[in-house]
Image 1 (cartoon, each protein chain N blue to C red):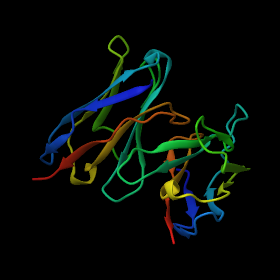
Image 2 (cartoon, rainbow over the protein chains, first blue to last red):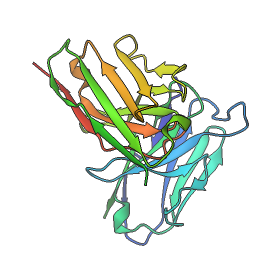
Image 3 (cartoon, one colour):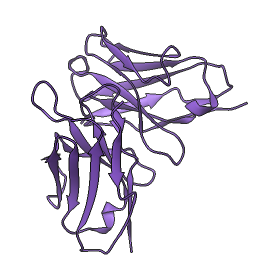
Length: 112
Length: 116
């Protein structure tokens, strides 16, 4: 199975400051069709996960442009340019290239 | 508006069975592969099972293979998860989600508790 390793697992941030989450996979996530199926999700307390980013860097409709995804192969990053109060919760990366699908452990973002 | 409405959760004894349903609306259900993902209390997300658009292809996590069966009825726009031989470690919130390489819409979780 592809292991998805996120860091840090806990991220205290100051409102208005940037934040960055790393996600590394144990195998390349490039699929035979040339796409890299690396996704980022955000889960607020008590809510279902919400997709933010798909195929490494494509932001979903309605997702603020302060969120950006980057990376390639096995090394990926989610960046928040300026953290807002609504960003608290857990961020997960997930690979959709290999079976079984696997998620990172999650990074809990809290406001200092 | 895309909606995924779930039903069928609850409390069941170890070794028992339960069937989850996920009724889809707001999109052409038969055009999308579908997935079940679960989240144990206070834990992360775990992919459980996925099914292709035409029902012909299914995938399962090793942890549920042989015990869970995913299915769909495209005429009823509904996704199912039949869960047999349930174990305490199957206790979780179960989400249905649209897609297989990515999950762009998620339903509300339905809680399954396996306990005597």
